[in-house]
Amino acid sequence: MQLRDDYLSGSALAERGWTPAAIRRFLGAPDRTSPRPGFCRERVVAAEQSEPWRRWRAGAVRRSARGRAVVDARRAALLAQVAALDIRVPVLASAALAELAVAHRHRGYRVDEVDRTTLRRWMVDYLRQQATLYDAALDAVFATVGRAEATVAIRNTVYAVIAAAYPELAGEARRQVAEHAAAVPARPRRSRAGHRR
View 1: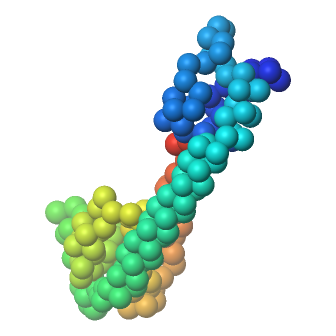
View 2: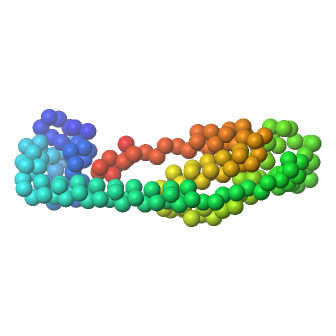
View 3: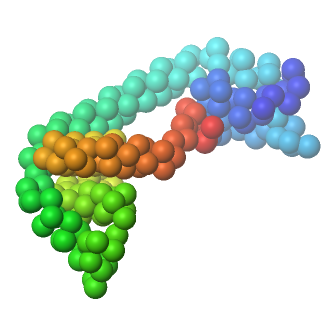
């Protein structure tokens, strides 16, 4: 937010590439504190034209690019690991799968007491939970760079394996993929200064 043409706010400085540490180092205290802190535009421009600030800014840009490259490499490595997973589901007769899914979901229920739509949902859920490596793969990506993308890739792979092994459940598997995709909120992007946009 720009206060007036002759003063710049902290957020306006952030848009120009300033960090809180750089503000403290090169500008110090704001020139105006009421109603909001503001830095004199002339002083900001003079600081930006100084050699120390230019060296700092070039270094900050390099560090930021290096950091992004490391994060991107870690994310790519994680997604490659996910792509290499050998995820399988048990292959069962449809009636046996239905029995297991109902027993897993509601003990005491019988297959004929559950409507077809619900039964298909339960069958896909059961297969997803029985998929080899599913839980271990999700646990392995916890708190890692690229976790969100890896979780989606693992889940989508499991649903694709289910759809391939059980063509009659492919529609339900696709529905669950779409449902999960709609339920995942977009992560807010951060500006260079680290503020949520």
